[in-house]
Image 1 (cartoon, one colour):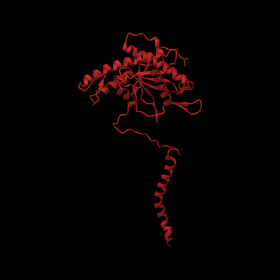
Image 2: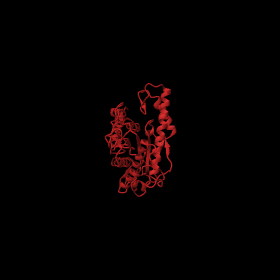
Image 3: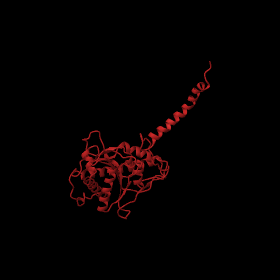
Image 4: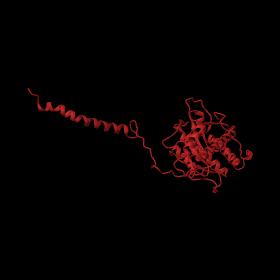
Length: 314
């Protein structure tokens, strides 16, 4: 006996409906888990600049005299990159991007109050910058000193102390080689145009410039360590070096200043406090003033008149 027509067609109908059911399940899952704020919230949207467009330059504050030295302060991280974080004392979290911006602002304010030095911040708000853009801002502004400010983190909550870094020898040679072979021969180092130079001459000029820049970066780092002895705790009493991307400028003295450890609860609270910001700003501003005073007159003393009564040590 033959089966009813409906019975014979049922498997075919189910087979045809299977893809529809799968598609409907995918749409439902996307609506539940894909939308920001619901489910797993895995959708991340990043604002990217059009290719080839340079970022706008920040304002330069301080004396109107363009002959005055210019310091560019770089608050690390920002935007969708929060950096390290630590629990706050009143709930919430202490984020590195907020700490570094507050430290940069405190140092800027101290320098402007002190007078005689121009200052620019790579970012003045919670925004994301590429590492290459940070150093490029300083070079385009023709800065005399670049300071990238960060806060450290470690698995050991007892780790503490500030650290100041300069560019390592390996990072220096890599940076010099890249700059020497750039296709844009109109680039310059320390005011010397490379456009009409051979590759060999360009490499020599870049190497010489890099050596001078390394020496001046080390000079400033030593001043920070010396001036901060009674006011800040340092993890190491010596200067550290690493191939940080933001330090790879052949003609711009640069340091990366890890102000302390957010993974240390006590130090995180100190970094986020007005007292901690004041101590950081006082030490670094004093080192900056002495650095430029010696640049003008290499035989000048340590300018004790720049010293003020130090706040309590961290």
